[in-house]
Amino acid sequence: MMRYRLLNCQLYIIRMLLVLVGCLAFSSFAQVPYDINTMSPQQALETGNLLRGQFKDKEARYYLKYAADKGNADAQYLYAISLLTYHTSDRNEPIAKDYLLASAKQGQLTAMHELYSNEHLLNRDDQQKWKSRYLELLMKNIDSHSPDSDFALYQFYKQEGNTEQAEVFYIHTLKAKYPAAMYEKAQRLLTGEDFYLFQSNRRKDANTWLIEAANAGYIPAFRLLISNYEHDNDYEQAYTWRVKLLQQGDLLSLASMGSILTGYSTKEYAQFIDKTLGLEYLGIYLKVAGTERMGSVYEKTKIRYEEELGRLSEAELKQHQVLLSDQLEHVHFLSFDKYAIKL
Image 1: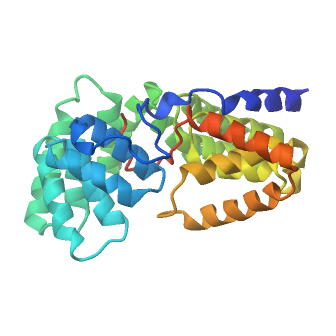
Image 2: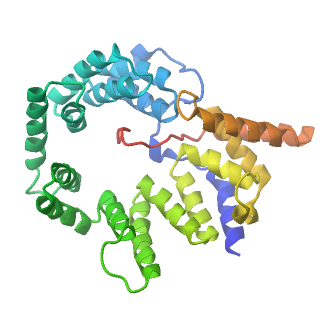
């Protein structure tokens, strides 16, 4: 019964407006319909952030640079990160450094962190300067116990080797049910923290923390939760959380769910095969995703899609094309990584 409820739920996923990742007034799968110069810096940032999350880094840079040159601190940071992480070169480093400095001078904390933690960008004196400035700004929020700041302070002191001070901030964030802290707690349990007579209870408690973090939208929690359920051979629960991850707008889930539903996965997922739905997921991934990162995923998805497409009758193929075209107008998917800007 659970299986059928899940399958019925999926039939509506693609038809939903998955706007949790941003409500942009354009289709990210086609050419931008108006000149970039008509965009505000914020609009250009949102566009670039989305395109980067869809593995379209070259196109994303165009928008990020535009917003960065207009003074948007988040765009300055993300453009610099793009230069440092995609097709990097010695020529890009000084350019990235300048954009990071411009962003950091506006108080962008992640830009400051990159400046002091990336040993290739600045000399030691300048690294220390930005490290001190980073800590100073975080400490300004210490009285309000902002979960974002507290968790950043936990990470800072942990990196510095000050375990006692780090734990103070970690406990604050855990009490506040901060998603990253709950994920950290689950990881600690899985690696041996606390005493358990029965190890099955350890994993159960870890999953409880992960469920809370996932319900708050923390993507890494979904992935670890799925892995844990698969490890325990509970593929119904693993599949349930795969569906929920897809509902978050996770781009790579389109490829993985498409593979599962078309039968290109482990035998434990065979009970969920639905080739019509799986074909739609694979098709949407190919329409949305670029190839400038995760190219191997794109190629494997393309092979599976073409194999399944070749098995359709002419009428089925026409219906698939109509459904795919309609669905793409309403869905925004992207891949979430540690650099993505929360918009």
